[in-house]
Length: 376
Image 1 (tube, one colour):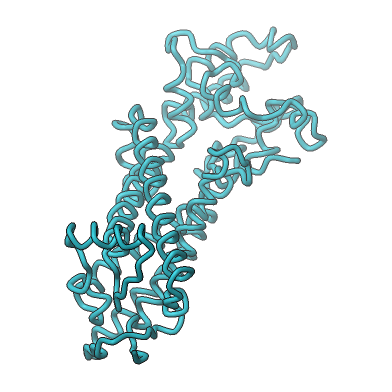
Image 2 (cartoon, helix red, strand yellow):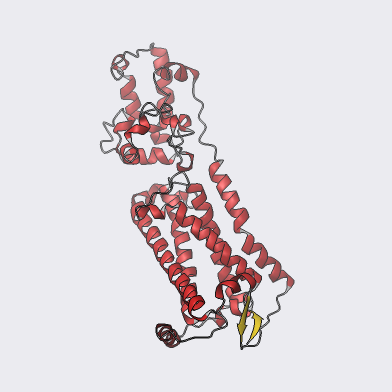
């Protein structure tokens, strides 16, 4: 046997970058949390998850392109998709018989194609969920019509992620089996590109255009991930002009709540009885009261494009008699039920209605997941 070049540089870069992207996407989605091991607050790391997932999608798309245009062993024509050959390969593995394949063996051929297809499906469903759950991304226009179906779509996204993880584990098991049983140097080959084989080296000369395009594509997840992360984390929330009179009159006892957390009827009901404002007399002269009410109604939840406003409104059952306490809205309760009582006693929080303690842009009515920082 002689040493020959099997894996080209583009394939090796693709492989290890995909390992990083998928690993980050799974961990930052708090997949370990579903197994009872809470590692991170997944909401706060959403930007990283989106960046890693998008990078993985770009890499998988590259692999399809490279499967038709790359070097011989990277092309799909070199894969072994015969079911008969797959069965024979599995039998050989179970009998601990040595097998010799220069490129992808039948097991690897099927798992790699499975990873590509299931991986792309997971990325696609992730983009859909991002649009209809977070009202962000290229499919955010679907939010209004399809948000009620978000739980079903999340289930599909999670299921595809678990299937992808299963295929990856099968792939890793096969690699370890070949490495331990036959010492074929598969892992080393993915670093050096070289393997020992009885086959002659198959060289495919690529033109300069294809070479440049392939290298730019395979490294593109790095700038894409950086761009998406910064785009998500630097998004300036909806800027509303908060009247000085509202700040002055409505922030002495608590924060000046953003108008988009309650529907117009809630604000109108609240301002109609300021003599008994949650047990206090907060009476205002008519002109001041009208200015504040006009501001709150104009920018109420019905008139907001923020994700939180949509979800708060949807969770109010009696639209004609909505609550005037934010904490009595079902969605607020659902989102905060996992927060321990001690958090509200933290010196930087002190109350359940101190939204700015955890939400960076709460004053402006923005409650994006990646802006959440819960004091510990």
